[in-house]
Length: 251
Ligand SMILES: Nc1ncnc2c1ncn2[C@@H]1O[C@H](COP(=O)(O)OP(=O)(O)OP(=O)(O)O)[C@@H](O)[C@H]1O
Ligand SMILES: [Mg+2]
Image (tube, rainbow, N blue to C red; front, side, top):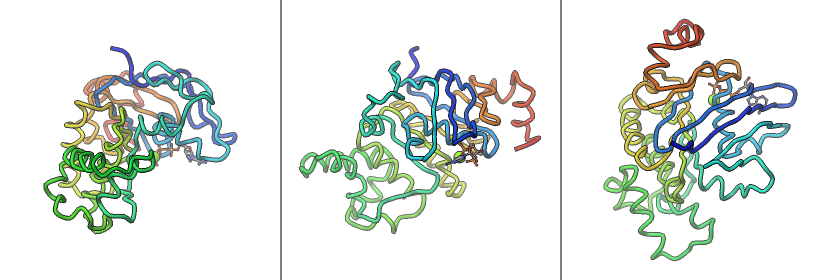
């Protein structure tokens, strides 16, 4: 199967500090891939390469290639707004805008110039349906997004991303602000969305990776040490350091 995302000899420097070392990774379409590893190993840095969010950090230099559907996205010709529409991102803390529920969901479309209610309303319904929020929220679409529970806010942020019909969903520790029950609901949702989207999730929670991801990448000090089917990474790792990490010996 052709990779949806691929890195080839990817190196990233914050000033003189080399945060990614020759990362070669292939991510399959319509599956969940988890990136795990101890704090500071470069998980978020790698994730942000996939929609060039690191461009926003001063002093960053990137070498190598990052391919989306086989095309390098690192060059100057890349339209960043289009790229970020194709490769959406959800963050650690739910970050709804201080707007109504409906304005949150339609935000991306409105930024791209769509103002017709007849076009926006069906998207509101389908995007809230996609994250299981429609029945809960359909009668109060004009309420403030900030009044929702953290889990609803995280789902709303996902709806906001889904509304612009991305191909890839990047999630950086999307459940770390949620309690176990809300986490389970978001994990169920991820499994449902995986039928349609390519999902890459960074998590500190190894059980979470084991529960949701078909492929897992283990990083250490900027290197991709291990990558493969999740079960193999957890139960039959090739590298001793992976084994130490997944068995809880450090991290
Ligand atoms: N803006 C920045 N400027 C300089 N160094 C940075 C910057 N962002 C990250 N780093 C460094 O790059 C390395 C990788 O950071 P990154 O945030 O990608 O790790 P992480 O695996 O996501 O960690 P965590 O699990 O704590 O979120 C760390 O050593 C970090 O200190
Ligand atoms: Mg991080």
